Amino acid sequence: MQETKLKNLTFLSQLPAYFSRLESQKRVRTLDPPTGLDFCSNDYLGLSQNPKLLEALKEGIDLYGAGSTASRLVRGHRSVFEELESEFSNWVHAESSLFLANGYAANVGAISCVADPSYLIFCDRKNHASLMDGVRLSGGKKVYYRHSDLNHLEELLQKYSGHANKMIVTESIFSMDGDSSDLSSLIHLKEKYGCLLYLDEAHSIGVFGEKGAGLSSAQVPSQISNIDFRMSTFGKALGLEGAMISTSSDARKYLLHSARTFVFSTAPLPAIAHAGLSAIRLVKEMDAEREKVLSHSEYLRSRLHKLGKDTGNSSSQIVPILLGSEAIALDLADKLAKSGFQAKAIRPPTVDVSRIRVSINAKVEKQDLDGFIRIIKEN
Ligand SMILES: Cc1ncc(COP(=O)(O)O)c(C=O)c1O
Image (tube, rainbow, N blue to C red; front, side, top):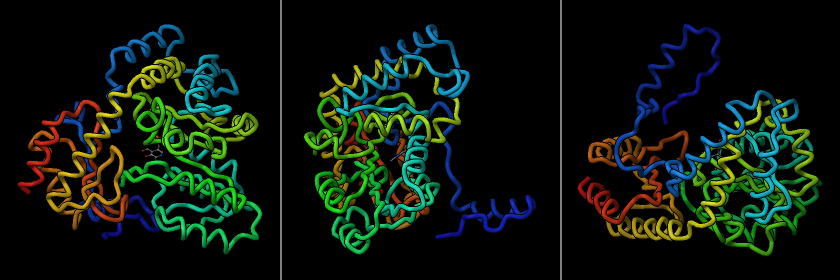
């Protein structure tokens, strides 16, 4: 892997050398409007273009204006935020929820204010950057366990069993691998060793569970309250932006007063919250789309396996095609793009193994999958 970090930047004059080192790894942007079939976004249910959602967003602007003008603790608060929090909590069976501007802000804000330097924080190796930044900012000691290896997690929990304050931080559906966590075992471990459990449901909300209420609703419906914090985003299957932390009423009150990304940041557009209410109502009724997305993902995996491709442990709408090198991944992404498929190469250092990260949404049809597989087969 080529070194891309800018070490010891003391002079802006070093930037040209830095950019030339980056050349082989440069991040690729797609100009607006994106072309080609969407095999890479997180718009899993196609809601970002749903006419009812667009209408709700416009209506929200008419009702509330554009910006919220300040933090919710100053004058940015509107009752629609609390309506959204209450409707969301009912949907995901939480005691209460707090709405933040996005998932990144939610993870960083919540973890860094709940944990402090007295904490040991047990982190899955493949946790999203926003979770890890929250952990770093908390000042707690980070303890990595091997990805999804709960035996390893238990070994570490045993080793540190004398430590008072502990938290486990993980994802429901991992964003780059599309595999899922075993929530029942995680709850068992958190109870046994007296830890807090923080779960990121960014890629499962809307797609898994009863009425799309997330992987916790699918796997552990009767134990949801044992998960201390669940973070769900509005920017993926819900087609908007924003994020909820679902937790106990007391913990919500604490976050509202202490999560720095909530307190010291302008409240989201009230129109987003207004549209968020519609998004929840729409998503609950989208069982057919959920089934389609998951069965198409399974079909894609099985066809890829027949071609000898490795999709890791994917079991969701996120299907990585693991490849031997960055160059192979970039070349394949390029060929797919030229054939009308938008599927992006994801490379180190974002992931350990270069890949095409395919994500299937409800607008992808079977013939699109067959066309995609044909290109993979030819290359
Ligand atoms: C697992 C996970 N958590 C959190 C986030 C951040 O969410 P947002 O894009 O709303 O900031 C992402 C975004 O990609 C993610 O994949």
